[in-house]
View 1 (cartoon, rainbow, N blue to C red):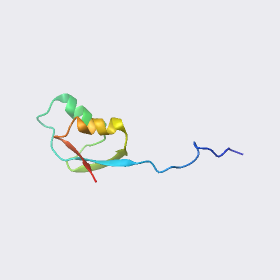
View 2 (view 1 turned 60 degrees about the vertical axis):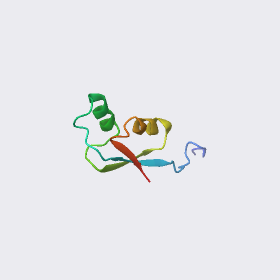
View 3 (view 1 turned 180 degrees about the horizontal axis):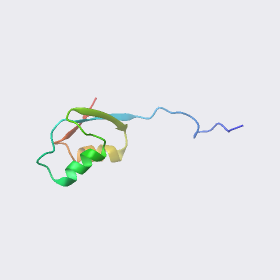
View 4 (view 1 turned 135 degrees about the vertical axis):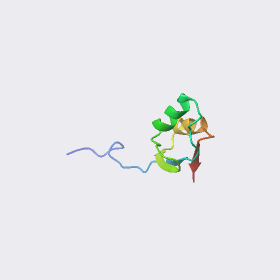
Length: 70
């Protein structure tokens, strides 16, 4: 019989919704790679990602391309 602990609990984790709203055509290659690494492929696409400091930092580096949707 498996033990019940914190590992088996399904806790609701906070997520943020990130929108790709500006084209990256004339941006440096690093910006393009950063947008793609977040899973964004089309303009005005919205994805949900975990609300962590690293995710917020990735969005903060590209404020001219990405925004956090409430």
